[in-house]
Length: 136
Image (cartoon, rainbow, N blue to C red; front, side, top):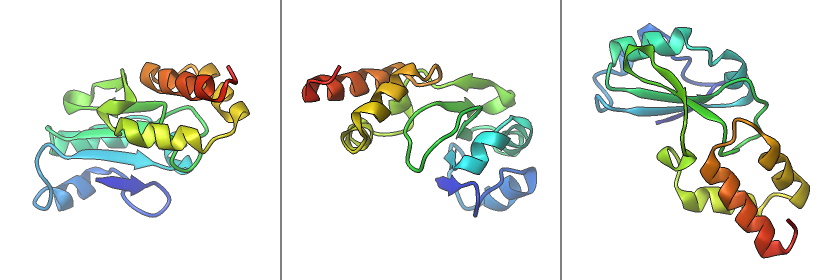
């Protein structure tokens, strides 16, 4: 399930109650958007997973994101456990990350390599794209 923060799911407890009968118990929610990165702080997300304990919520935190940017996700699981993603391919297909990287400029890709929160697999694919261009 994907939601854009500016016009959709806000991850409060009442939304989890409303969705509970319409999604699988182990739903994975990707909460994306520039607005989301400023408000993905755990309070609401923990309420959401308290109602749906098998759900996992993914979002950006403390980073400016662009539309479709496939990096720097955190996940909140049952009990409110809040951790960074070890690899973005836990959430997104590798083919999407490669597609996204091919459409970025060399400078954009070099910036990704400097983003501390970027997952190791994203950085690997970005390096591979730059190498393919002969630009690293």
